[in-house]
Amino acid sequence: MIDASVPRMTGSATTGSAWKLGACHCGRVRFRVRPTNLLALDCNCSICTKKGFLHLIVEAKNFELLSGTESLQTYTFNTGTAQHHFCRHCGVHPFYVPRSHPDGFDVNLRCLDPADAAAFSIEPFDGRNWEASVEQIRDPEPVRTAPR
Ligand SMILES: [Zn+2]
Image 1 (cartoon, helix red, strand yellow):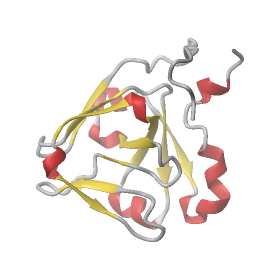
Image 2 (cartoon, rainbow, N blue to C red; image 1 turned 180 degrees about the vertical axis):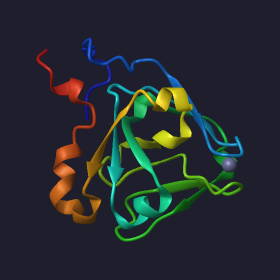
Image 3 (cartoon, rainbow, N blue to C red; image 1 turned 45 degrees about the horizontal axis):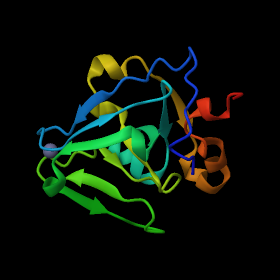
């Protein structure tokens, strides 16, 4: 874990430093997220394929649930590490706690404002071979690896 008291570098490539609003379909679950890079992952694993989830992974401090705690339900499977939250009213999965980053949050890019989502580039992630692929995304925020 990065000590939150350490000032973070923000390079010119990290134009996503502003908070973006997101919500489920019915609007009961609302959140905001502060992306530190404009990259989302398209995972081919069993659950992401069926959900159509596009992954925007952030540290916990860059995610805030604004409303809808009482509307969230949680689905778990396999190792039970990932907490797949969804709105029990509309069924949409706006964000979850991913197995790859259990201390962070993984936001569904499709639940952001379309204009905000359009700014992201989308890269494939081979989640069907999760164990072999996960190290590539263990650092979700490349700015952290920039020279300090
Ligand atoms: Zn909903």
